[in-house]
Amino acid sequence: MSTLRTRIRPAAGRPGPEETAERGLLLRLLSLVLQYPDAELTRERAALAATAEALPPSPAARELVAFTAWFAGQPPEALESHYVEVFDLRRKSSLYLTYYLHGDTRRRGMALLTLARTYRAAGWSAGSGELPDHLPVVLEFAALAGPRTGEAPLRRHRRGLALIHHALSDVQSPYAGLLAALLSLLPPAGTAELEAVAKLAADGPPAEDVGLDPYSGSGFAPPGTFVPTPQARPTLMPPLTGPMEAETRR
Image (cartoon, rainbow, N blue to C red; front, side, top):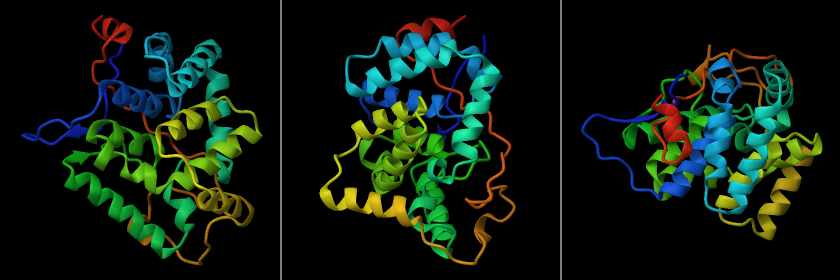
């Protein structure tokens, strides 16, 4: 059996981030199951489900248990098809977070560069080939860099996360539970933020007739003209405690 490990690793000589084991594990699991369900990830479905079931009770844990049970029971081809449908072909549930704040504008290109620099400054590197705002990448960084620094990008993009959750709920996708789990870990939304999410859902992100020069050639299709893009391999996860630890030692 292949071993799941994270693709974001500490730089040589740097101490590991301080984080609670439970919160870090929740974020790592969310990062994994929000990735494209290729053969490597689907082989680990039983281990993922067992790890979710061993989590201490919480709203996020309950959502993960429900999702991993569904995930484990679906044919691999059905999982792949559903993932492409909800994340690649629907712009309101794209996993590229800076789109919701900036649309396809010059500001989005700068936001991507800023996020990449945040990772480098913290001593982490992403080797997946994905853009730095891809939600599974952002979640890995959050899990490994800790609540203060690591979760700052998630807090900054809470409106986008709420919109993804609403869009997935509208089509009754089981992935909506994963966004509900993530939102339960973040500060609650206030009235102004809820109004902003409603406006974003109605009007869409900002628009501008420019390309994303800093990431030209990235393969990212602007929302509205999405086509399925090549998916990165799932991130490989460091050894975990509990049932999954036994799996990874085989």
